[in-house]
Length: 321
Image: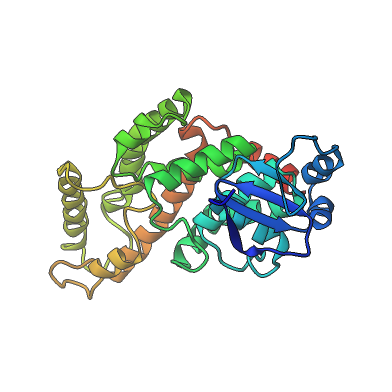
């Protein structure tokens, strides 16, 4: 027992429940945990075995979770400011263990709060996706998420049956620069590896092409201020993108990521200025691109074999009720 250490900020001498996770002891209120969790309520109703390990007269209850995960879970239950509800921000390293352990230990209110945080970064409408992208880092802990985090999000969504999370989770995983990590994952089921590969081929092929049809269809845009310049410039930009895709060193360009406000600004200029497209054409192209993005969004779940948004949103409504 000399190798055990007391958890910082989670060892209270006046409390009667002693949990051990790895080499760390947590001494907390058993009554408070029992009031929040049916798991801990039932656990404390069992008689103490005569051969139970004890410290300071208290039974040591060993749990299989990591000390780091248990610390975050207990802080979320016991300390109101540690994991506040939306719109407060959080991080993946905080959210993931709280999701897992609030589900495992049946802390329903905490699980619902954690699911709300996860849902906020995995929208089910294109409008909410655009708002999330415009928010940049504020509240979006999935921005620039690593392959491991994207995989973990899918695994948690599967484990907790949060199916509406999956379309955006698979889309983010398609951005990975490390496909070997996905295929080598021992936790991701083969069926999900297959849906990822099939979906990736569709994203990187026909759907990427559809996303940029506005560069050459229609060839002439009504009201164009530079009819001798704009059509050729639009096609030129489209061909430049095609050459970029042919460079295997470049990251895969996905339909929703491929052309944003900064790139629109880069090609917008006064009529007949070399290298620029007139404002009339740009505004029409933006409208066509938004329509293409909306069509893609509506198809996104089916691209990965996940059903329809309507069915997924029905699951979300039942879960969050």
